[in-house]
Image (cartoon, rainbow, N blue to C red):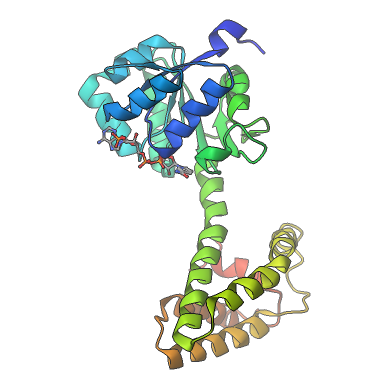
Length: 298
Ligand SMILES: NC(=O)c1ccc[n+]([C@@H]2O[C@H](COP(=O)([O-])OP(=O)(O)OC[C@H]3O[C@@H](n4cnc5c(N)ncnc54)[C@H](OP(=O)(O)O)[C@@H]3O)[C@@H](O)[C@H]2O)c1
């Protein structure tokens, strides 16, 4: 690695919400000298008690170290801080490791701005809970120029020993993290919807919890199978077609309607299946629904 062990052991963290504080703590735990700034002073004080050095203003955090991790609510908060505190003039020769969740446009605009002021940029997405950082369950996706990523490697490994290098295209963490969230959020919202249906139908939730766990045991393997079928162009052959899933879902819609639960989720899934039907792929595997979602198909 090109970075000296001296400079790699020091880093600033701007933003000490749940995730920023988790990042700062994991870095302190790993033996890093960590400088922190946060709008609310009590969170700085808590980190100082934990072993970090506190700053009064964000500019101090930028001055303190060559590597600065930013983790705030969103990019607009960071943009406002840059403007209000004149931070851009301090980006020269600094590596900003941006771990705030952002849109493709925000990520690109931010990278140009940092580089335009002589700074270096690594943009990342955290795909785990704060308490998982620094453990085997950590998951960090990061993009940046090869030299920047090489420079950040030892620091990133303190948070996630197996962080994912997504290469030079700065948009990739925003894209991949949201793509992964798509599967998580719909299945978790679906689960909550299922609980509401049980509640409305008088089924004890303990029974739901037990059987849900059993039913879900097939899901990880099925998720992998679907993604691989799409990757390999094998979306036609199936033992459970879009039509079969759609009919099962139609029955769910009818049950939910009878029980009077909100149908907004079922209506959306039904529409996806119907679009597949209109495209003539009803007899294909569920993975063929990728045709419904592909860019420009809507
Ligand atoms: N929490 C998670 O499990 C998780 C997981 C993956 C990714 N993330 C991402 O991590 C990022 C931070 O999330 P979080 O959970 O840490 O959020 P959070 O707990 O709500 O913390 C938000 C942070 O932004 C600061 N902030 C908000 N408005 C501000 C303003 N106007 N001026 C200055 N600072 C301001 C807050 O400062 P104050 O303390 O002063 O309010 C705090 O440091 C987000 O982009 C999120 O998507 C979070």
